[in-house]
Image 1 (cartoon, rainbow, N blue to C red):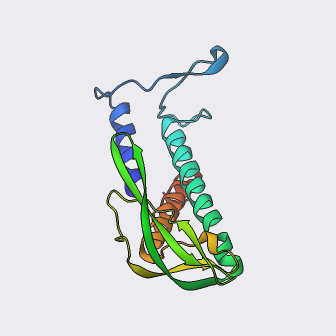
Image 2 (image 1 turned 90 degrees about the horizontal axis):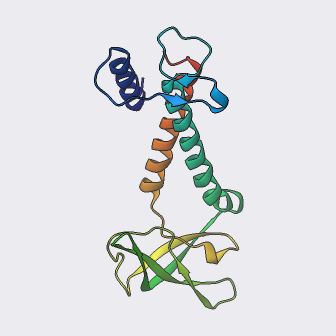
Length: 175
């Protein structure tokens, strides 16, 4: 059983034992009662099931968005080209400043185009003027990005693990 499913099960056990945690009574629409954790496993969904379904939906959405961003790379193949960092684009969110590198990438016609790397960081890296190799789908130099294979593998791994754990817990196959 995964760590998140264990935490949810522990919290629900504490609720059933009457510990002083906040009430999770949720009124159902049209006056059909309340949604509360129930130890008798009747046909009404439990809070645990709702949490697991929310986790399943979040993990599935994250995986779908990651696969969508990688679909051109998977279908068309990948091309590695040299690029240079020309500046950083600043974004301010909630008092924090985030940076994304702007790359000068050669295009298919022998010219150069500027492409913003989709990854934002709290510090301006790589430094301006640095030359590095970027990847882009064949025929789409505007989709160039700095390759972070371990980062992407880690995100896929965490989302995939969360998806499988929630799916096994919801279906009951993981117990």
